[in-house]
Amino acid sequence: MGAGIVGLCVAWFLQDEGFRVTVYDRRGVAAGASAGNAGWISPAMVAPLPEPSVLRYGLVSLLRPASPLRIAPAALPATWRFLTAFAAHCTRRQWLAGVAGYAGLNSLALSSYQALAEAGVAGRIENAAMVAAFDRPQQAGPLRHELQSVAAAGSLDCTVDELTAADLRKEQPLLGSRASYGLRIHGQKFLQPLDFVQSLAASVRSRGGEIVTGERVSALNSRTGVVRLDVSGRGENFDVCVLANGAWISELARSAGVRVPVLAGRGYSFTVKTPEPLPRPLYLPAARVACTPVPGGMRVAGTMEFRPADDPLDQRRIRAIVRSAQPYLPGVDWSAPADAWVGPRPVTADGLPIIGGTRADGLFVAGGHGMWGMTLGPATGRLLARCIVTGRPDAALAPFDPLR
Ligand SMILES: Cc1cc2nc3c(=O)[nH]c(=O)nc-3n(C[C@H](O)[C@H](O)[C@H](O)COP(=O)(O)OP(=O)(O)OC[C@H]3O[C@@H](n4cnc5c(N)ncnc54)[C@H](O)[C@@H]3O)c2cc1C
Image 1 (cartoon, rainbow, N blue to C red):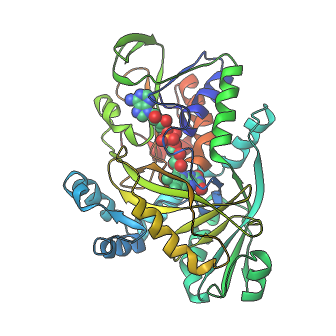
Image 2 (image 1 turned 180 degrees about the vertical axis):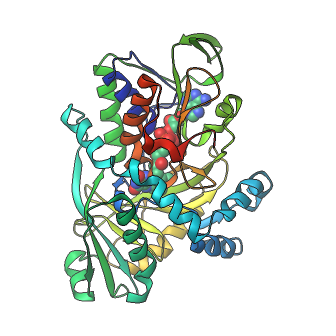
């Protein structure tokens, strides 16, 4: 269930294990968070979202509607318990434990993309060093610490260079004088998410899979050997079902004993034209904005807005991203943001995904990857497919037990 990056990767790797697959999506391929995101395949940066600075940021944001982290006051009553649990995980100790938890899965991120590419998934994946730009060298401390912690936990080979103001301008000529210091993170990749997910869907179809769009799964139950789904009012039987429906996953997963709530942390993006190409992805940590090269310009992505997944796009969030990024990139034409998009990151309170079996026979979940579903989708599909075949989860999945 779910034709986003995670559901399609699960389907693809299940096909590799010899399964015949059907993927249902209530809307279409990449109709959730997997279309307009930044498209960074960046294991060097994979860490749980809850950490001490996010808590400070979150509290201030309640008073500042233009803040990149936004908890809509109307959403507070429904999200209060989740946010309290999220806040309880914003400690250094829990964050480090989460980084260690991610290590096994994260170390398979790039090789799993490689497996897709070698088997003919056509979506283009580009090698790139990411550049993070700061107003002052002191601002770089938290990201440098994060990169060191992630690399140490996963034995990742991650080289990071320091960039002076002059280096930065050479590396990213679109940057103005506001940024005076940078970090260059080698060995990462990026892709155009919608193109890639569509290529993946085409590959699932070409290997005999069925992708049924415009069909909502509204209920399920499992008896030994058969999982029965209610699909747009009719019953369909399967041997195994994987819920991979992103920020909507909790509604059905709860009935299978999954108590870890998944909430929508909505992010926004748009494209702008640039006077010259953005040579490689650019991160502006102070603005919490990620810029990705696209033909003719760049996609600008940011914001974490806790609000129901299906609420309409809020143009004020787009304007807030423009205001925060503009001072860093003064030569860009910010007057006409195009392709405005909002997508719900599936966020858990402890910042770790849910991947594995449930209390219901034959029913599995794969979701809750928050900020890192594009990076970890293929590794998730690969390990979950193995787990379904062997009946034993790989040790790398242990931290993501859906019944934790
Ligand atoms: C602004 C932004 C930037 C991001 N940048 C990055 C990045 O650079 N790198 C990275 O690794 N990650 C990034 N992410 C995170 C990433 O986009 C998500 O983690 C990932 O897309 C989640 O994928 P998913 O397949 O779990 O869910 P989704 O892509 O949301 O897919 C879920 C699908 O389930 C379908 N569905 C829902 N309910 C039902 C139902 N009842 N029946 C049938 N179908 C249903 C939906 O229509 C949807 O298509 C970003 C996210 C945002 C918002």
